[in-house]
Length: 226
Image 1 (cartoon, rainbow, N blue to C red):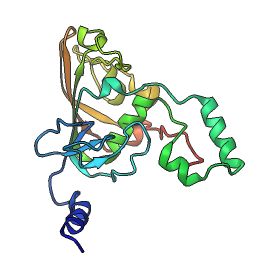
Image 2 (image 1 turned 30 degrees about the vertical axis):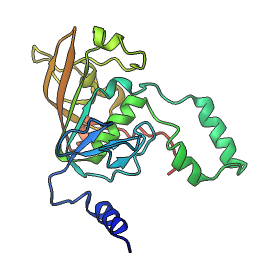
Image 3 (image 1 turned 180 degrees about the vertical axis):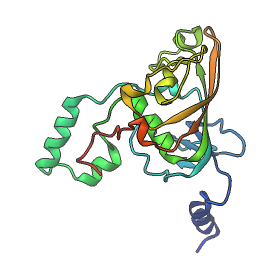
């Protein structure tokens, strides 16, 4: 066995060590944060795991693996829409008539029924974060010049947007938002949130353990591909 092959096997086996503190940089591109495991859909310098973050679930990333997850200028690119139901119908037909195989759909399409692309994205971040772990993200505030300047920005986010993911989120006056019950995504706790309406926003969220009082749902609606 060559030295390169040996090294490759070691990296694959040891890249996630449950005893170590693990930092992930999702959508890192060529600018991976120091000390992190880099995840991107492109195999470029610094990327350790190739994973398309718009295909769910993220098969390359196991449950409860990260202590801290970072994203920088990624969330505004995540399509918030649910999949086209006509596409789901077509895939069902192709599977039923055996034109395509289930394994091919899992690999190239992933789930094709889910409630909102951004909600589903946040649920995957929750899944791969250890209990009590944190998700830290930076992005342009919705409606700011930095948001509008990029033609690929499709997901406007404000501090209130993130309250949809925290069942106990409160406004600046200490009043409950009561927004979580609308989509009932996997639960987070907003730890810190800084924003400039004409600039950028940075938010730190902590993974909550699911409590039956939250009424959390499984936002994956796809029963045909598991």
